[in-house]
Image 1 (cartoon, rainbow, N blue to C red):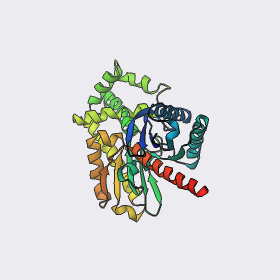
Image 2 (image 1 turned 60 degrees about the vertical axis):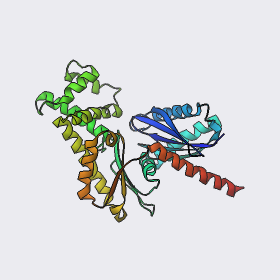
Image 3 (image 1 turned 135 degrees about the horizontal axis):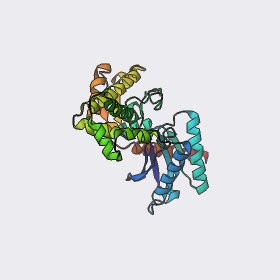
Image 4 (image 1 turned 120 degrees about the vertical axis):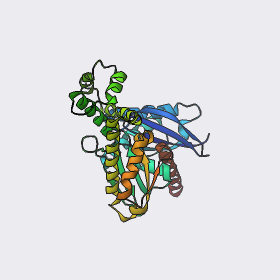
Length: 320
């Protein structure tokens, strides 16, 4: 049976796995729950990853012992301690099942950049449930701006937009802002008798960051219908994220003319967001070559897993 590697993209709303076999064939469609410990608990994130791996290994055509490497690009897992904690969990998972695969833990930004450029050098700006800008130079220097979580940052993220939507409909109810189509959309979607029912829903104990980020969808849809409040929310979020990206460009002279990849669900689903981001970034960083992500971030994780597979092979050869 052909050997294969697994790339995992773990976000604040869902986690995706992609299988890349040694003959270059790709298999995807494996999806699980959130794997960002800051969006859910570490325990929940770990369980979701384990369930996703179980799902992959349950495929009849994928012999578990033929998996040689797994690379996980996880949002919210940035510090050495966080990565070590997750690595220990994956190692325990592997050892309990007697499997041979090598392990790499990185962040969701690195795999998204690799997926689009096939290279580790450049800038990646992500807007999904959370947001962040990462950059790597050919000299191996790494930089970041944003990505400090929903309480400390995440400007231009799904959470940021969703939070603005929630405030906007309540301000419209109070008469502070003009009426907005967002109100009716939310009432219909959640079955509220009045928009004031939103308070009981939002402050319920089970509501998490990902639940609030889901309200960004209403802003995207309403903006497409030219609702002024929704358009304002989308534009302001995109401008804030462009300013975050420009701050990263200023951190190293190499970034002045490098490739910048945009990734994440907000870029993917909102043309207004992507257009506003590009328009705001251009005068701030005129030499940047901007491009949308071209492949799933999980594919980038799989490419990194393949490199890890190769490195492990040669390491074993040297030992013998």
